[in-house]
Amino acid sequence: MNQIGNGINRFYDPVERAAETARIVCRGNQRRYYRFRAAKFYGGIGTADCLGCCLRCLFCWSWDKVVRPGRYGKFYSPHQVAGKLITIARKKGFRQVRISGNEPTIARDHLLLVLEQIPGDIRFILETNGIMIGHDSTYAQDLSRFENLYVRVSVKGTEKAEFSQLTGADSSGFELQLRALENLARFNVPTHSAVMVSFSSPEKIKAFRKRLRGIHKEYEDFEMEELVLYGTVERRLLKAGLSFHTAYEP
View 1 (cartoon, rainbow, N blue to C red):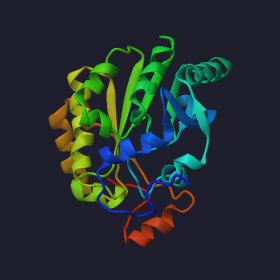
View 2: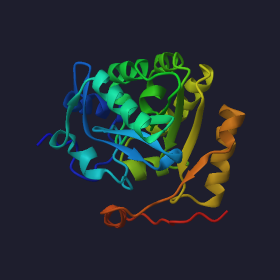
View 3: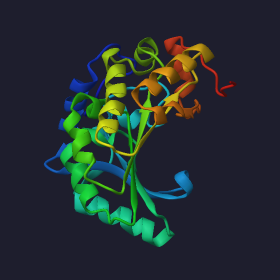
View 4: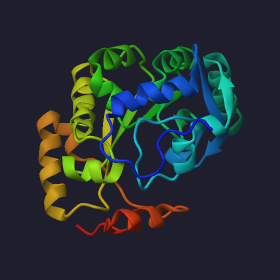
């Protein structure tokens, strides 16, 4: 069945989980995808939904595909993925494309080869949890080669304890997310952070904002991600005993 994890597992190493998952969703420079679509986000964007992630976020809208990545989709080459994204963008008049659904960065060679084939007049938005970019600074250096790249790092919570509660991963993963922001800033890769705040108090959000400002002044104004109760999300959160709010009030 190629299942990675069996629900709410605690304190795994996200870097090891990335390698474990890559063995299922990567084959040479190919990667598993389950759909290609036009999406309304960012004002319209061509989207390739990949399979495989190194985190197990309890609020994830794509939970089953994260936990059982080998059950869905099929393998595509970088050329095929880039071609489908470009076709969607040209047909819809979009100026942006992305890989979404799960975590793009666990297939490093594949991702870089896709980026090489996206023309300069189309912006590629890399949506990532940042774990692999924080783990290896040369990843950010590789990404800095692409002038049409913009990175959105989705940080899971505002502190280590929240990160572990939300993802089941070792708290060191939280620091890897912040290190990713440091690495991207060092290599001048256009970046902003998005932070899940539906489990955070105003005080924790304020303290986290200060920490981001310490990395780079532009990171202080981060995007606030708020919980959406897709599918079985609420049931998973209640099972884990997590309290949350679905609308942040400053």
